[in-house]
Image (cartoon, rainbow, N blue to C red; front, side, top):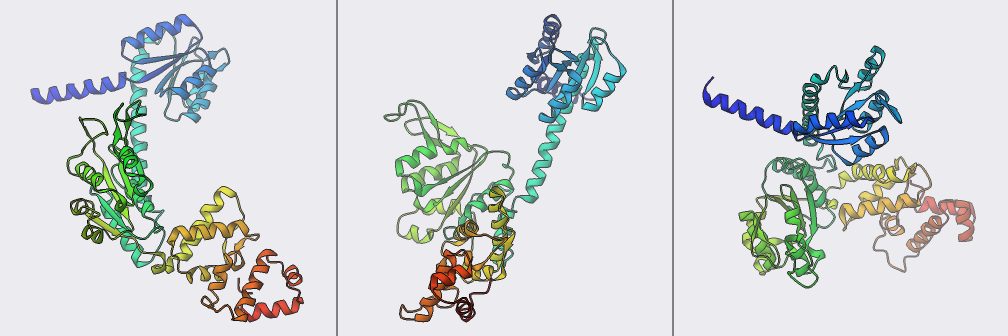
Amino acid sequence: MGTQQLRGRCYLWIQFLYSMTMANVMIIEDETDVRQLLKRMLTLEGFTIHEAADCKSALQLLGKQDIAVALCDVKLPDGNGVDFISQAKKLYPYLEIIILTAYANIPDSVQAIKNGAFDYITKANDNNRILPLLYRALEKVKLEKKVAALEQQAISRYANFDTVIGQSNLIIEARALAEMAAPTNAPVLLLGETGTGKEVFAQAIHTASRRNTKTFLGLNCSAFSKDLLENELFGHKAGAFTGAVKEKKGLIEEANDGTLFLDEIGEMPLDLQAKLLRVLETGTFIKVGDTKQVKVNIRIIAATNRNLQQEIKEGRFRSDLYYRLNLVTIKLPPLRERQEDIPLLTDYFIKKLTESTYQQVKGATPAFVERLQKNDWQGNIRELKNVIERSLIVCRSSLLNVENLPVEMQYDSLGTKHASAFDLASVECLHIQRVLQYAKGNKSQAAKLLNIGITTLYRKLDEYKLNEG
């Protein structure tokens, strides 16, 4: 082996030992002398030591500190160390516990291993085994955490676009482009009407990226005045303005190594666009009231419902920023252009919205879904979600039906959307619908309120096709 290789291996070994000895170790021992002896020995090795004299204080420490390994006595004032293993491992699965006992016995040692102990050793007689065991336990902790992180990363790679619902060609194309862009660091520009799911796409792209273990932050640029938006994005130095008593990090700094989603980017003032362009080009910015540069490594995903090319022509958006942002442009279709996705979206929202309320609604009738598909959906997916949520509130059965829809949607779907106020049949139909809704679908009560016979009501329901759903 050459000198360079030997030095390299020695360096890696030193780095490994250094990372191991920086770990937090807890000693759970009620005898102060024994606890202090162990503490001195392990402190000399570079470990950070935490002490507990009983099970209760040990659990409290585990909740406050990131403990990697615990050395635990068997007999404690408020419990048994062997039983403590099960309790602690259930709460902290990556914790490794080495049991120390003054009097070893086979049943205890067997039970300790069954409960998840890393090893079981005798005090004093096995002191020379403590350090090797401790290093092995730390290596196991490190390896298990690394495997778990890789598993989570692998899961997110394949499950990250599950929140993008739809099978229409338009949404499949948009999702495919987003999946190709996700692993890169390229800026992404999402275009589409309000409510088409731009933030859902932004979050999915981040989750599928190599930055998925880092921060994802979002900001609506239209929600702030110029000064507030600048402060939110770039932060400020202490004393930069009246009331700035301490330094504040902006979202660009908070999202370092992660992703920043800027919604309604077309609303950003021109001078702030110049500062954002600098971040994209150089990875640096200057806080409000400061003179020194801050370096960051972030990915920008921007979204807008405006025509940015038209905004450029009219002098409201910088062309250089536009060309930096639209390296990958994804157009999200309005809901009226993907109506075949409405049944899937309806099913998704019913399941999601009933999870927290424990409602017994299992789905929707075909007539309910058909009426949804006939709507224009100017508010897109956001409007659809609101309509389904409102329908769930008034629903008293296991399936959403037409009567649960807002009255105007029931009326519009009958094909009399533009009916004249003098169209008496349309007015009568709408009146019957409203009364039925008020009576919560009870036809006998509705007939009484309408001052007609029940048979007349059924005839009217058939005539206006209101018995569907």
